[in-house]
Length: 114
Image 1 (cartoon, rainbow, N blue to C red):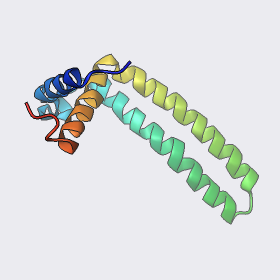
Image 2: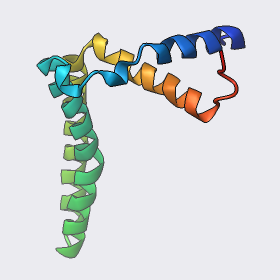
Image 3: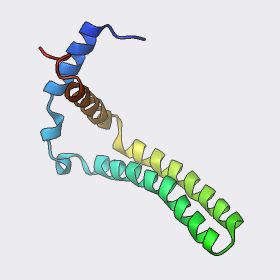
Image 4: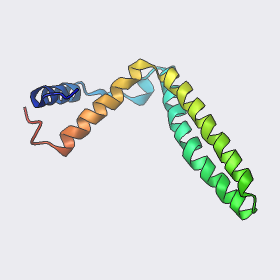
């Protein structure tokens, strides 16, 4: 569904007015912080670890072993990411929305003038 430009401008300005980035990260609940770190860790596990395993397997001339281990690591990263998303909870979704609105206002400052 497409949002009309007036509503979009109003929405971006309302989101940026919330000033969520002034709250310290440590003020978030522990469960949410653990969930955020697990989601970030899942990206590292899912993309960095298989690449390192393939490099090591290539050096040792055991590519089939690296392919298998990399696939397992990628699958584990999805599980870790899902657990992290569950721990972070629905209250965490307001932060990406806020930072998207703030990014839009930085990129197109003249469009979002009040």
